[in-house]
Length: 221
Image (cartoon, rainbow, N blue to C red; front, side, top):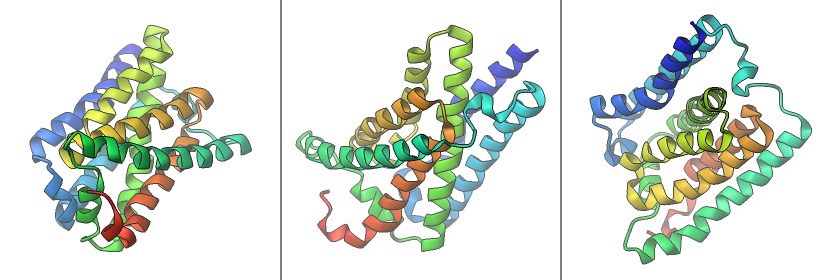
């Protein structure tokens, strides 16, 4: 019974987001449309809550089984350090992406800058919490339980997460997100504390979606 619940949970975490993207026809233009962003936020919370319900009521496992636990001081410190390293990856990868003739994440940030500030705050909190549950905590832990291969489990979750960013950020932006995702994935594998990853993710998105729009004229395209 628990294996069945885990299989369904893995589909919800790693498969359902792709089906939602196809059904809703998500694209980069969604980032500048408040109604589409509200829909995106609602669906992400719905999927994440369904997954949490599977963990609690079908698998009958505690949230700690997917890494949701109180962070220690070291977890918080590492989350801040990982945020700094992650932010630097975008600076380092931007010239590479441009050299390949691709767009960086800047056009997507420009689109987001057009929507109300409170909506961007909602995006930051939603992505930081729900995406860590869907693409880090649950799949890595459950795939590791099934396969006994933590590295492979992290790689599968990593790949799905990066691919899902293609519709919004394009190939170049997804490449940058991919490098950043290495940092947050390593943070989880090292500490197995999802709350630390949530903190890092929220800090990153707050920096990108709330602070960086103030400097848009100076960002590389």
